[in-house]
Length: 574
Image 1: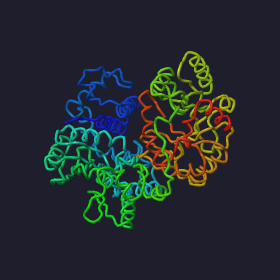
Image 2: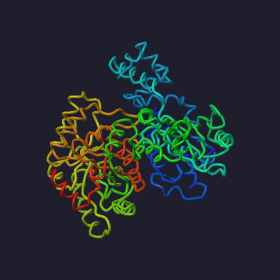
Image 3: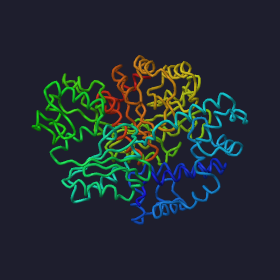
Image 4: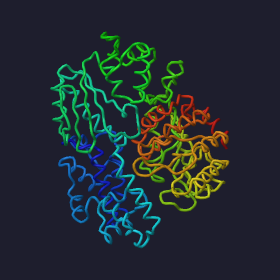
């Protein structure tokens, strides 16, 4: 059975989790975490590299031992080392690490002292009041754990879009390889560029539907065929992702694509509009009586109800119908509009490549400027540059800019916003940088008023230009910090600062709602990769998808400007 990058990354993450609970060497744990990240972010499937006999140790963070493990996983779908760890600790114990507030020490204490192995065990222990008596917990922590477990167990599992893409595109390609299939499209919330998806909708054009659904359920990654018919089928993949397939003839393709893309609220609004004009719209087409008047393309379907084509990212029934009727649909930003990237890291902090390598990778992707924004602090935070190192890097950037052609490096830093709202770097250093990015990387649980005041104070610093990943969330791992985002956006506008849309698939922060809010307040958004390696510049595509969901146009995005225009805007923030 094919092994995807996400499968390999999940194995390495579980190994790291189990090693953490066992209190193994921190460097060994970090090696598996780094490997998981490298594999997950690779643009090429690892199984293809293995099949071609390529040297995996040439990849960052992949040494000889890890390369052997990747080869083993690709060949067998398993990892012997993980199997041995699972014999020492139940694999369900790793679920505990995904509960906010439960690090490896607490997870180990729960396992050893209360024999908690699963979320069900944890929930029962919390309800019985047994956790509060453990050293380092207490009643308040117990209540936090109880609420977190209840929230996690009642939510349907969702996949980050970048992870779901690996499985969806592979299955779509498998179906498209059949001579019976004329076309395959991925629809649903994935096509609307939602940041996470609960399932995948596939649409195929074919005349022999039963043969296509049979091929679908025979896919070697299908763990369970949930239903099979002549025109539709549903299955659950080994990774847990449910996939629904619909097969239609060519004349119904556009109508079916519109129907399966959704959202439900958008489709209802379009159908209501059709009814007002004496039409009926369903997944087979637009009909006036028994006559089909549209259906082969989405454009024709929208035209039948008097609307221009509405991009999938906008189909949420949040004003797009009214904007379309009034001719006010936004001309959404595209990846090609980006002129530069204002957030990236090198090996000087926690990145994996040097200045020149990052510059050349950005230039090859068509960017004309790149801000080097390594983590920097005066308090000695791990993997960060101290003030002296920042100044030395600035000199190095100047020397490199004298040699580079086609791209210019900007001197910047990603600086921690401390609990009191101050920036963790001396003003004498901050004022010499081209761009200063403020970021929250700690104290995530401050009360709303204190957290908001913290960020507002940081925005008032005379050197700050950009607020990085403003909600500090990690999708599926960490909830957003509790802040008054409307107030922060408004204050950024008053102060003249900018907000970031971090394109890392785990962040996608700002979210779409706050992008629209920033647009309304006239606050420019910078769509950045937050690249930690050359490969990470591909993250920009994810960020553009989120920006489009937020109705952002080219002029709403800071880094669509030329370098000359950008420098003028940055100067105004200082």
